[in-house]
Length: 288
Image 1 (cartoon, helix red, strand yellow):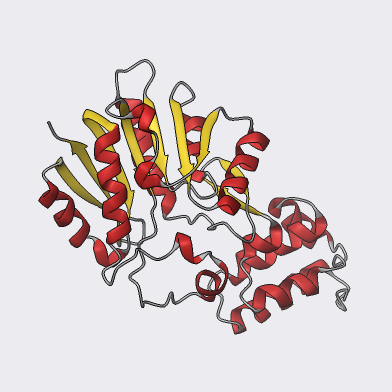
Image 2 (spheres, one colour):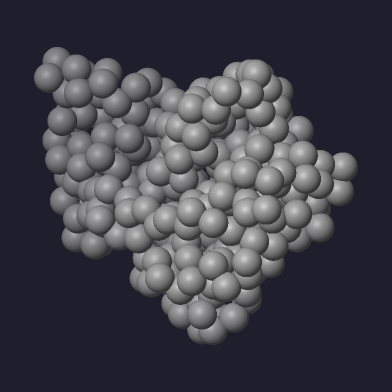
């Protein structure tokens, strides 16, 4: 199906209405992004072409219809922006979210403050590779390792690493057993593990219907079983004084820090809010 609207501007306006009617909060941004994808250009160029009265591209209507059915924007464009990177994503891998940029940022800020010439960083549950690759991109002198359980997600992470030309060691395996060769030798461990409570249903259809379950559910009614197992592995990997960052659900802003404190492995435990003012990530220092 091709667009029946002659101008790009009117096609984008109609797309915004269609997506807004489908309950998509980011209807304006998504409509422009889909137009850019159909035109194989940038969103900035779309705005210029709209002013110039350019015609609507073939295929935009089909893309808008798919997005209105709540297929993730990133699955339609094949890409997801994350900090300074453009990542390839699709079925089988968790689409990195804007909130996770905070998690990467906490690790990156700590690395920049460190006085070590070469810091060793581990990303547990790397998914698309977003955090690990962002760390390497912004702190190129760091030695970065990552692990992913899903073979499909691991393939996406390897593709992103190779496409971006970033030297990151990406392994396939269980985060709770990973990197026996790095025990007590790591400076920073960062993780965005599965943390949704079992039985909870994500509100967004994009998450509920398209993100892989292995990347979502935390293995217990409070969602903390897998995060705490991953944190226990982080404690083994980190040297004394090493830094730990973990993303969590907004309802876990008290429970996860408390559970970490109860293990005796951590000190200086702090929780951090995202830009929406919701609890989003915990940081801690490996105690003696």
